[in-house]
Length: 460
Ligand code: MN
Image (cartoon, rainbow, N blue to C red):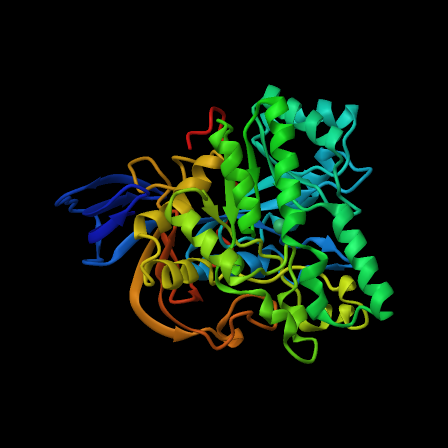
């Protein structure tokens, strides 16, 4: 079956141009002016922005953490992504200590296969580093997993400096790359103990951000970048949240180091004042790193505009209010994370493009092209070009609506930005040639397919 999308404004990371798109089955067959094909069903998208399907490079679906499991598994989580215009996510398959990498991957396939409504790939989070895991990496990479995650904090997953050095060295050898959660664990542990000593309890969520200070992120970013410089390999800073952390990135880049940076909408549009909300409502906004200040938001927007940040991902890690209530007596026991899969493209458009902070081309780069390049899904994903998957988002720039938990696909029973009025959303979302979602409703559930990373260099 062929479809001809006529008259849309086709967006890439570099430009936008009125072009027709001919889709044959699951692939894009041609892109050009005045295309015609007598067999094709014609869809008029005149004057509408058409993006390559968005890619969310940072999600946690069906993750066991803090003695519970995230509200969204792959079933609801991928519906949420698709509804907002995301046609492919990359989730963190996570190795628990004592497990092999093969076991972790098998488990993630069991969680995802047959459930997903958008395409999905995996990163692999390494929590246990030893000779066997080092040997296993060769098979894992040959099998199409080329991106890995390391944590510099969290008792269950923390990797020490030697482990980070050795893993980066091994990944360099094998052609993999690591994304790293950068926060200094010692500072966090000490600050948490201080709150308890001072007050005798940790009920006040308003004390949360100070337990994960800006400099705890900056120190870890700096340390990671020096370790990566010793290994002489590029590295990814995930969910960068602070001005001070970004300054460390700029310093390393000025010295010639290759550093990729991801941030998330929550660090761009929400700030730490949310932790002061009454009745423990601040728990809804508990994520790590925490929400920061308006000065940090400005620094991150400026970095986005200047091309200093490469990707905007969600860190979608959703919990219900009942799950969040585990932190009632001690905020440190709150499962950390927020839902955000549905809103990411609309938030970047509303607060970025509409506000004049970034261009639609930059939005395309941050949400689609750059994550595709960084995680080696390009040019299968991330671009509207002949041979690529026909993942298309027809943008409705005029749609005005209010964010409501009731109109969402996520299993989380709250929306962090409940009641916020936005302009612009994904209108029609095509997954490999098929109309899969429209105006937030799912039309073709369960069609998601597993995608592997390609061989070769990162071109970004
Ligand atoms: Mn995360």
